[in-house]
Image (cartoon, rainbow, N blue to C red; front, side, top):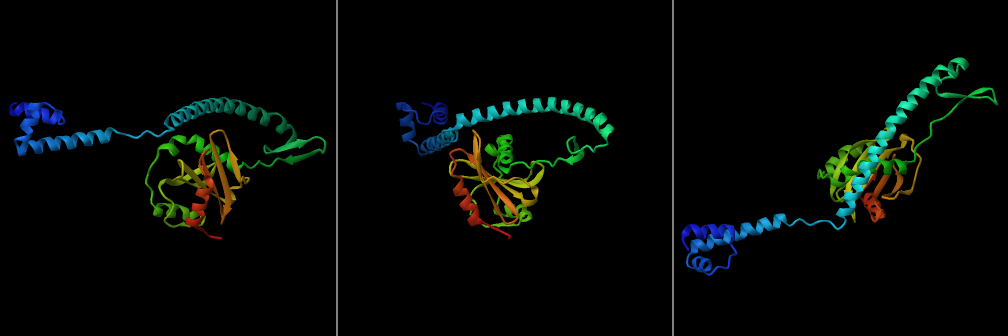
Length: 254
C-alpha cells in the first residue's frame, strides 16, 4: 500500500480492518498519529449527528399544526365579523340613535323610559392566559434567549417584584400585551417542559381564576403584592412546584 492510498484510507475510513492498512499503520509513528486523528474526527462527526429526539416530539408537532390551522380559521372569521360589525355599527348610529338622542355606549330601556349604560364585561384572567399561550405556542416551544436574573429584575421592577437566583433556565422574559394590558411574560424550565408565567398588574381589571384549563394546557394564578401571577403549562406539568419556586425566589412589594 503506497503513501497516497494509505492517507486516503486513513482519512476516509480510519477504522478499516484491511491487513495491508493495519500493517502500514503499525510500522510508522506518523501513520499511527494520522489514523488516530482521523478516528477522533470521525467520532466527533458521529456525536454531532446523534441528536436526541424528545419522546413527545410527534405530539408537539401535531399540536403546533393544529394551532396554526385554528389561528388561520380565527383570522378568517374575524375578518368577516369585522365587516359585519362595521355595517351594523353604521346602521345603528344612523337610525335609532339619531331619533332618540342616545349616546353610542348607552341603550334605551322602554319599560323604564330611561337611558341605561351597559358596562363592559371583564375578561377571565385564566381564559386570557390560555389564549395567549396557545396563540404564541411557536414562541413558547422554541425560543431560548438564555436570559439572566438581571434581565428578569430590570423588567420585574415595574410590577413591584425582585428575583434572586433560583429560577432555573429562563428561556424568555419581556413585556407583552395581555388582552390590551401591559404584562410581564416569562418562559421558564419546568419539571416536564416549558412553563409560561405572566405577571399582570392589579389595575388591569381581570376577573380572578385560581385554576383553569383547556384540552391542551392548564394553569393556576394567585394575587401577590400589586399584581397577579399566572402560571400556564401542559397537562402533565406539576404547576404547584413552579408556584413554590416563584414564591421562594421572588420578593414582592406589599
